[in-house]
Image (cartoon, rainbow, N blue to C red; front, side, top):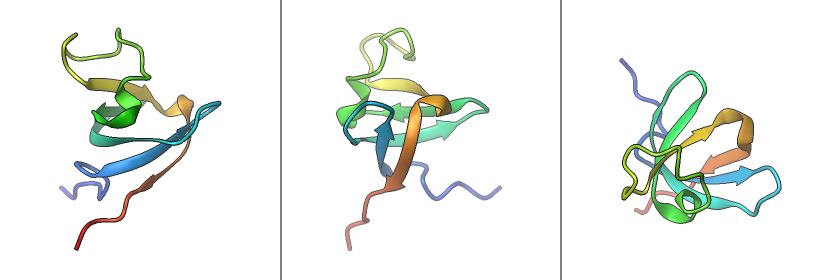
Length: 74
């Protein structure tokens, strides 16, 4: 199985009506991404999380305008 090159990478997300925010993509399913931390996690609904105290959140594809990977450090 080939992993998506964005998994476990910091990504910049642009959501509709918001400034670009960053987070790390953990995994993907048929409707969206599980993300962790960064500036994006704090803007997502608390009900879409794995554990209330966690910074892991679920982000639906329909909310994403665009995304791009950040540059990897050398």
